Every structure is written in C-alpha cells, then in structure tokens.
View 1: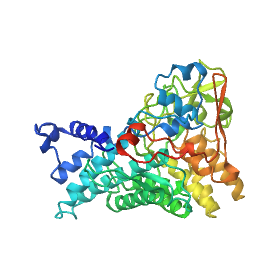
View 2: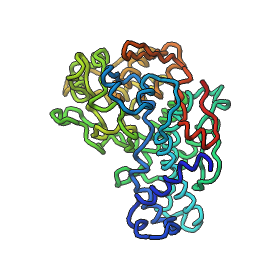
View 3: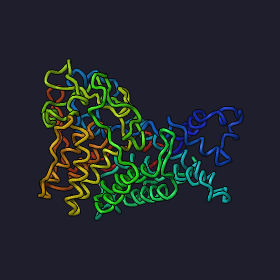
View 4: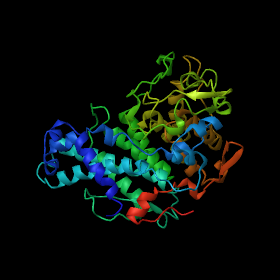
Length: 451
C-alpha cells in the first residue's frame, strides 16, 4: 500500500465524527453520503474541517522564543527540532495527515454532488459545493505554506509543491505537483467557492463568500500578485468589514479575545500549540516595545512572564484557547492585505485608509492619530510592522518571512540560542520548506524536500 494508506484511518475518523445520520448506520458501506443534505451535514464536521492544521511554520518563526529549561521540557522530538530548524527526519504524520482528512472529506462531498447532475441550480447544492471547494483550497494552502518553498514566478514550475488529491479514492498513488500547479489548484478552488458560497452563513465554522475572498487574497499576497490581492481583499471588506473595538474587550480576563468574534471570517486552528503554549513561549521585550503605550494590543495580547524576566506570555489567542493556535481568516488580516497590496501598487490613499481604519480600533479611545505618511517606501515599512504586531501568533509569520526574504531589503536571519548553542536560519534557506514526515516518504515513495 502506498502513501495514502495514511489516510485510510482518516476515512473512518471522518465517518465516526459526523452528525447522527451517519452514526446510526451499522454497515461501513452505508456511510457514503447520497443526498445534498447528507453532504451539508458532512461539512458540519468541525473537528475535521476547522481543526488540525500544520503548526511547524509557526513553531519555526520568530514570534517567540524558549528558555533552555522550557525547550528541554518538550517531550516531542519533532517539536524540539522545528524550533531550531534541525535538518532531521520528522516522524509525526499528524501535521500532514490532518489537512488531507479535510481534503478527503471535501472530495467525497464533491463526488457525491457531481454524481447528482439534477438539482445543481438549487441554492443548497451551490452552497455545499462551494463549501467543499473552500475547505479543499484552505487545506492545500496550509500545506503549501509549510512544506513548499516561497513562490517565485520564474521557478515555481520547477519547484516541488504538494500532492493534489482530487478524488475520494484512497488507493491511488500520490505524486507531488509543481509549486505552480499547486497554487493554481488553490486559486481554482477558491474561485469556484466564491461563485457558489452565500453572502451570509449563520453557522459558525462554515465559510461564506467573504471568507473565500479573504482566502484567495491571502494566497495572492503569498504569490506577490498584489493587484489580485488588493482586488479580493477589497471585495471581502465590501461584504464584511467588522472590527472589534479593543477598548470594549475584557482586559481582566485571562484570554480577552472572544472566540468566533466579529472579525473571524473562517475559524481554523492548528494541531496544537506545542512549543508556543502559554506556559512555554516567551515574547521578547524588544518586540513588546514596538507597541505604543496607548496601543491596547500591548495590554490585551501580553502579560509578564513569571518564568523569564523581561519577557511576556501571549494571551491574545483568537480561538480563546491555550491549547491551539488560531490560523483562520479574519477581517483584521484582510485590512492589512489590502493596505500592503495597495501601497505596492501605487494606491497610497487606499493603503492609508485601510491601515488607519484598523489601527483606530486598536488604540485607546480618542488617542489615535491617523498616519499620513505619503512616501510609499516608508509607508510599506509601517504597514509591514503593523502586520507583524497585529498577526502575532496567528500562523502568518512563517509565510511572511518566506515571501519577504525574496526582497533583499526585508531579508532576516533568524537566530535561536539553546543550551549554549547558536542556531541560525538564513534568508531563503531550503529549510523554509519543512521536511515531509518520513512515513509519508517511505510509504508513498514521493520525493523529500531538497536540502
């Protein structure tokens, strides 16, 4: 059996975690969905479709650091290696397997719907198919960001992307598509979802059209296709532009950011916080000092770390959780995509408008002074700094480092110090594409990332 054997267990897990209409069927052959309503219920499987996305990138980024004692306390060797970018075999398949569970379920829904030619104009049919395309696009993109190199137009056709599983079969041999084709598939899926998803979706965890606009805007930003990123970010904000006023949040709460808050367009979390857990990760004082005193994020995101002087623990989790990292889509991220894409395409006023709209909701009431910078190069640096400060611990930093390292002026060498040893990750290192788990390589006979 090939690499996809790793997904056979996922098949059973998907079936067992769906709503009661599947649980009541005793024969495993009967769990295949047959109706549009069945498919709609399948997409309510929050544990499969909204949870378990890769965290290796977040663990390798510079949002945090670990003390010697905290690093040594981590029992999972892959997590310890991810922190220091060790070029060692990874054995934990969960980071790889869980997104492909979402892909499998999405493919199962799409195959069921495509077999039912009749009713394709029905609103429920359109919404369910749009949701399946969205989930597949989101899962593929999460995998690309961790396991593939940064996108460069001139090299993408020759770089390795990810296996693109396009049907629900588990016996077909997987091959790695090119990075170019991997991104093309994500864009194609998001585009189909935009055309089918409703403008409003009342069920938490399910995507709507604004979420699809946000997802594809994120993809185009990764690809440095700034005109497209601007267009889709703007389209998203025309549908959903809500921002929390940080002055109204319960600052005394241990986790002051509410779950499923008004900014969340699509809720998604990682497999686990790992080294970035509240009691392990520390944020350096130099980053804390980037926040102005009247910036409410300074109080809402951080609290002093008792175990490491002059450092802080992060408490601004958008899933209101200590155990997982939020990696979903939010309006606040979209404002920053719009601002960066605008300034990179000569739209200074649009960049200022988007940036100021966001920051005004982050500062203490009546203290924010709007940014009026007209120099595009200076304004870009301001926007990138605000992106860094706003999206901390939100699964964006690894992808940002990869794409910004392609520009010499923004290149950054990451440094870790552990137990007297110094570890470095150079700009554009091949290590920015994490090694695939060894069981995947061994069973699937697919190529490992180059080193």
